[in-house]
Length: 457
Image (cartoon, rainbow, N blue to C red):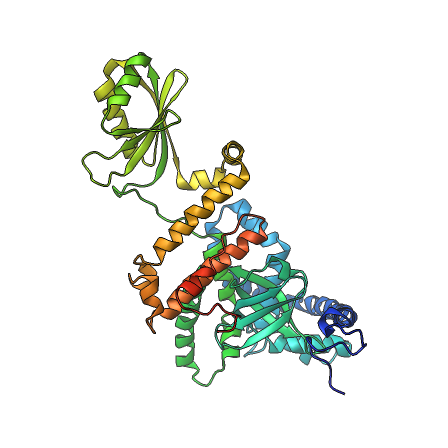
């Protein structure tokens, strides 16, 4: 008798789908048996790998797995990473199952070939399935939290539903994963050996690196299959994680004048407040706001950009700008129009990296407390609506400076457009997972005449 499918009626007669009724219980029993076999097999394999004959191989594996990247990190952060359970699981899986130790054989191959290994049939079965597996790069197509993850192999385009209870709760649609999918004793696909989570926006860059190495690999071994390539290059998943997640460089941000973005605050003692207030009110380069502050505008420009903000704080006048150069210009400008009625006290500067590291949760809470949450949500919704409406008809560098509407009509640009829309969607899902307000961008697909994945055309 054939086993029922996940969406078939449960054979117990409850009238509920199999996946919602007896399947979880049956999987739970099988999972417990598999976990016992897994733990026993890995314990014996680790004991075998601790033999002195593998000491040099382990040192080589460490170099290959971490490369020079680990030495670029602060010593404390590097050691914490090396000591983390997640990193140890990933390294050991690479060392035991992927590293070529002896003419194409891994530590696991050598262990299984040894005649004195006392393994149960279930333990041997687990290790055999692991040694036949390899890392791959996946895109998350959909998630059933607490149950499974539907993934697409970005190399082969094959799709698989992976049973994953805990990890599925932390994944979002269009996430990019570096993972090893291994069938359990019942043939159910599961993740093994740890997961690498990458940003959806880094998909093309990571794929490009693998394709570059694959071309070189195929020149030396034209008959090799993808599995052999990914086993040989499985350390690249860790390298990509270090490059794009752990050690991701901050973007180099500059102002319109091409100066580095540096948060600058200049403080001036006000010696004659009435004179200074009149002077600022009459200045052509300032635009007064209802809260008493002034926007400092670029002079002599039809579309005048904001250079900074002036505001009174007690007996002082404060200028906040986005660069050291603007802070210096602001001082010269103020002293030119206010003269001896002001006196420069100090200028403090903070780089973008420092600001992101430090953060300012107190300031965020203070700002949020000033506006009711429902009002701020409505304001943000309207702003994002306007932003994305304008985006539809604006040239986009990632689309070769074509507009999204034009790209939707182009056979060559449509895939890049779809990737951009997936990135928007992924950010929405990630925001929801973290409990933050999420803007739903799915309406963009319909506006552009595209079918949202998973819906009927």
